[in-house]
Length: 165
Image (spheres, rainbow, N blue to C red):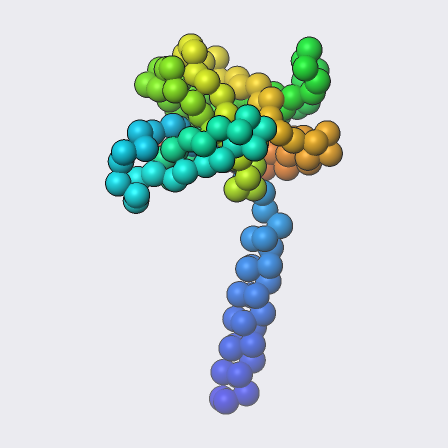
C-alpha cells in the first residue's frame, strides 16, 4: 500500500511540474484601458510605453485577451508591417463597447506582459478588427500571429453552443 501511495505522489508531482513548465511556454496578448491616475493604487497600474515614451495609468484587469482572437495575420502598412487581429463574437462586442466608452483615451496593448502599443481611441471599432502597429520585431510579429492562430484553432464554448473555428 505504501508503494502505491509513493507512486501516486510522484505521479502527481510529475504532472504538477510538467503543467507548470508548459505554462511558461504560453504567450499573452492583453488590451488594457486607460484610467484616471487619481484612482486608488489597487485600481491603477502605471505603464511606461517605450516606443512613445508615455507614462499611462491603466486598469490592471485586461478587457481583451488572446482568447478573444479568432484570426491573425501580418498586414503591410505604409509604416511597415503590423499584426491584423479579428476577434470572435465576444471579443468584437467587447472591443466595440471599450472603444465607445473610452473615446479620447488610450488602450495599451501588452504582449507577454510587455507594453508594445499605446493606441488613442478616436472612434468606435464595431467590425471586430484591430490593426496592431506596435513595438515588435518581424520575428515577434510572426511568432504572435502563429501563436494566436494556433490558439484560435480550438473549439469555442459559448454557453450552451459550441463553435468550431
